[in-house]
Image (cartoon, rainbow, N blue to C red):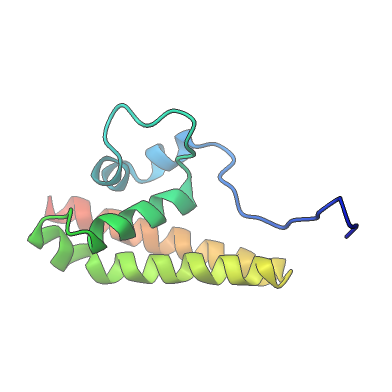
Length: 115
């Protein structure tokens, strides 16, 4: 890495529309319409915003009881991804990305089942 040119390894959602297709209930729970322009609405942002809603008490008691633990786990996986990328461990980040998507799949099913 040069003094001026910085090299970064990062996780980014390639196609944000896939987030809504894959986890429509979680997206609706997290983001109101219309969504803020100029802000990314990808997987990492979904997890961050879900955690924020949980911590700010913006979920119903039923949603908090049903989803709270999994939301916290998803945020911890997001942190694992960021830590692995920060340490240039792309393989570990890749493994954690699958863990995160699997957990979001479970969270979506749990939320829809209870709805």
